[in-house]
Each structure stands twice: as structure tokens, then as C-alpha cells.
Image (tube, rainbow, N blue to C red):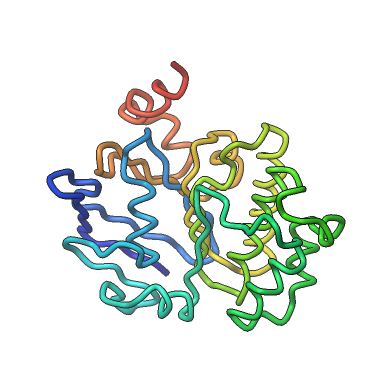
Length: 232
């Protein structure tokens, strides 16, 4: 569904992505992991159109999309969530979701609400519900319009272990039930290894490993670059 070929991006003299190759299969959850500053969120930004690659190509559904706008990509089925929650605190959950649904022509809010267990908080302002529930509202908005490719940037950030696992199971169910594809940036390794079909590991802007989760666990460079730093 998605392929990055030799993609680079620089902030001035700092090369946040260096010749990145990445292939995401349809109807899968593909994890993108690595230490802080590895270039993961930049990769999500480049795919979503928030940033333009300095070089290389991005191919979605067989079509190069490098010059395409954020709006075009959203209409073509690419959606994303952010590290920071993007809800409006004063709005109720129902109003927040209704606004998002109107923007993209979503006609089945009830199913999304049920899938993400938001029924009991619909009448509450977003700033009155728990952080974990706010995270699910954010993901619900990313699901509006039945996107084919969902880019999730650290959806479990700030959640407890129990909330993270619950969210992971929701994501796995959504992929199965909707036939959606997810590119997931996540630091919570329990979430990553629980639901991802394949993993790509980045370090200092480069891909250092790509494979099945069991293969990544055994990769010595990954253990040194990422897992070791995560445990220290």
C-alpha cells in the first residue's frame, strides 16, 4: 500500500531522515520504532504531507504522492493522529466527533464510538474525561471518513500500562474489522510486540533493521541501539 524509496528530509544541516526505504503491506499494523530523535515522527510527517521530502519518492497505492497536499492525501484515504492530543477541551465528545465527521463525510459515527468504547462519555466535555479517553477520541477522529491508511504517532504516550494494552487491542480489532492499514510510531514495546505484524527500526535518521517482530527481538544492532537504551 505504501512505499518510501530513498527518502531524505533535513532541518537545515540536520538530516532527520537519510535514504529511508519503507514498505507497508495492506491490512497490516506496521511498527516504526527507535530511540528519541531517530526520525520516526518526521517520517510520519513526510507521509502525511506536513513535510516535503528533500529527496526520494513516496508511493501510495501505486501513485507517487510527493507533491500532493495534506487535503488531497486525506481525501485519498491517508489519515493521522498526533503525539499531542488535538481535541478541543470545551467541546463535548459528541460535538467533537460530529465536527470531525462533517468535515470528512463520515456517516457511521456510532460504530466508531462503540469500537473505541466512548459511549459513556459522549455528553462530557473533552477536558473532563481521562487522558486515555482523550487519546481514544483523537484516534476516533483519525478514523473518520473510513481511511485506508492510518498514521498513528505514539497513541499510547502518557497512558498507564493497562490503558496502553486496552488501546492496542482496540487498534488490532479495528484493523481486522475495517481492513485498514496502520503505520504506528510507538515507544511502548509491549504495545508494539503485541499487535504489530512487521517492524522497521530507525536510528539517527536511518533504517537499521526491518522484519518480523521475532526477528527484530534478536537483532544485535537493534538491541544495542534501542532496547538497551529503553531499559537503561
